[in-house]
Image (cartoon, rainbow, N blue to C red; front, side, top):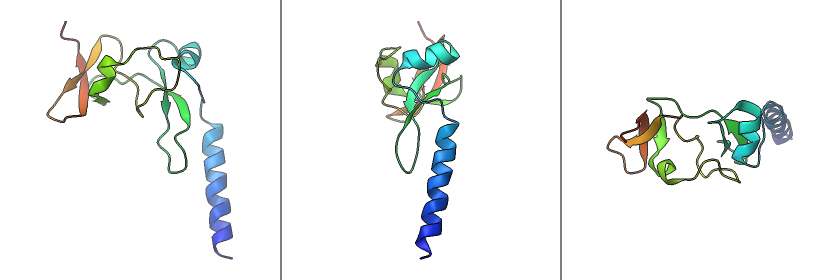
Length: 107
């Protein structure tokens, strides 16, 4: 009996948070809604990685090194929970094998 109220409150919280999301199926959805640089990325969630529009990652912020090798825009949700670095920036290695920080492009 005590599980039902907890389950109901959790479900309502998820539904409320999903209502505020800008759901997407590709980067083009996000570019159309928010401009170039935004991407369609999985939402970090305990229940499901629902794709949503997110802004480009700004300078100094954590990024995935592999995002430098991914096409943009993609015609499906991206594989990472954060967008590639903003225009003029690239994900630069800072000692971690997978993660880096957005910094000025070197070329």
